[in-house]
Amino acid sequence: MLCSAALGSTLLAAPAAAQTAPARPAATRFVADSLDQYVQRGMKLWQIPGLAVVVVKDGQVVVSKGYGVRDVSRPQERVDANTLFYIASNTKLFTGTALAQLEQEKKLSLNDPATKYLPDFRLYDPVSTQLVTVRDLLGHHLGTKTFQGDFTFWSSTLTREEILQRVRLLKPVYPFRQDYGYCNAGFLAAGQVIPAVTGGTSWEAYVEQTLLKPLGMTNTSMLTTGVAQRPNLARPYTTATGPLTLLPYDQLDNFGPAASMVSSVNDLGKWLQFQLDSGKVQGQRVLPWATLRRTRDVNTALSARKSALIPEHFRTYGLGVFADDYNGRQVFWHTGGADGFVSNTCFVPEEGLGIAVLTNQDNQSFFEALRYQLLDAYLGMPYQDRSRQLWNRAAPGNAEALADIKKLDARVAKKNKPELPLKAYAGQYTHPLYGPITIEAQGKQLVVHFSHHPNMTATLSYMDGQQFRTAYSTTAYGIFPATFTVESGQVKSVELRVSDGIEQDPYVFVRG
Image 1 (tube, rainbow, N blue to C red):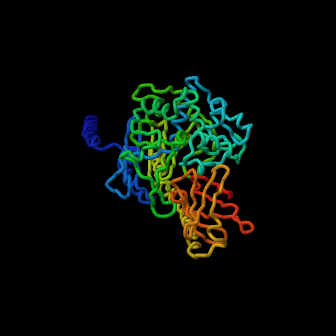
Image 2: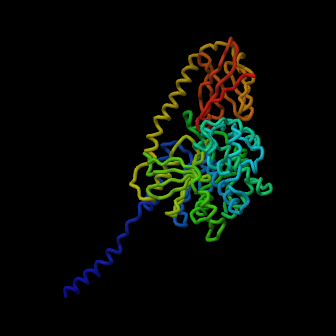
Image 3: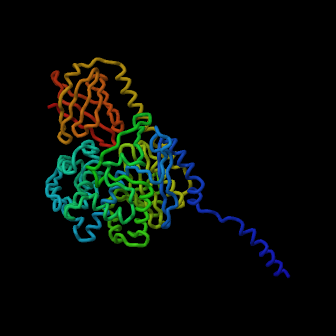
């Protein structure tokens, strides 16, 4: 009877136990219960008008949605999963994959000299010119500083061919192949190998035929030309100089293989599924696994030190994609930044996990915080507010930058009289890489016209000594001092600088 009674108790208890829902994994709880609130709170803190996110898990899209607005002046224009954003350097893995596939087809070797396909291509040093390979171009091995030359190249009227002609003027700051310097012009050169080995098929046509069409990425544009007329395109904003400010759209077709693609999270979800299924789409092979594996192999070693911020111990670069560890799993990722847009894509093959975040405000780190937060949830990390963590790290620097601008404003407000008549500063100035700029006196200010950026000007307002405050019409370029050199009463040169996100070193333009 005891046995029978015990059995009866067990049977009676079973229905009650069945009614108790099993504990949900942390990732499921975060995505279902907390994601919307977390994103909305982060967007408010970081002043982000619009954001879209996609999460792929085990072959399924579990999140693909938008938040906020495409245009702050039109609050009815909401971001959705098909809203287009510039993805900038997330373009690079498409380029790296295309070249890896051409190698797989034995149409080239990534270890071939670049000059085999680009006979006129030159680096600053003739020995490096002879040694540089296609793989070097994809691995940021050229010895240049990160973003070196981009003030000249970025969103300029220079053609791809003209940019490559100017690469020989980039004086390296590191020994060839020794150090990592992120080089957009190098990726452009790598992309220009594609028409050389395909009989004239352009980079954009080859990537569209080889990747976009088979993956069904019908809402993705290879080039920025014409996208402003697309109906569901987010507008770009920044807070780099204070209040949220609308920016013009970058024109990046000249940098195509490095930065020109425009996409949505719905389309990037397909890209992530392709990456996670080793080159297949809905079970059908599109590219060999060997091609994708080649893009992920270590091309450049970056770090083998534990991060103080995230559970990472190493970082490498492949063919357009970073790799690191995150709480014991290997993660592949890349970020992208254009004026008014920052984004990232990320995939964790061991977990069948892919993430992409697109935003239309460039002076913020929430696009990275959200990626970390999702990785924490899916990879078993204890909860900590990554948005607040990154905000606390960024806030002092942002405050200092705005304080520096206020100091410049205060110097202008003193209304000091220039030591020379404004007309004495007017004329044409030249930089060996950039080429000519023209400065003219307009009223009580000077205005700079840029030969390769005809839609941008800079207003120079006198402060003191030989310094003027520089305010670019494209706000993302920043507000900085401009310093003139004067000898024997004659203006000889002017030093201009732009935001570090465009180029880190100033340019000295010499008067002609």
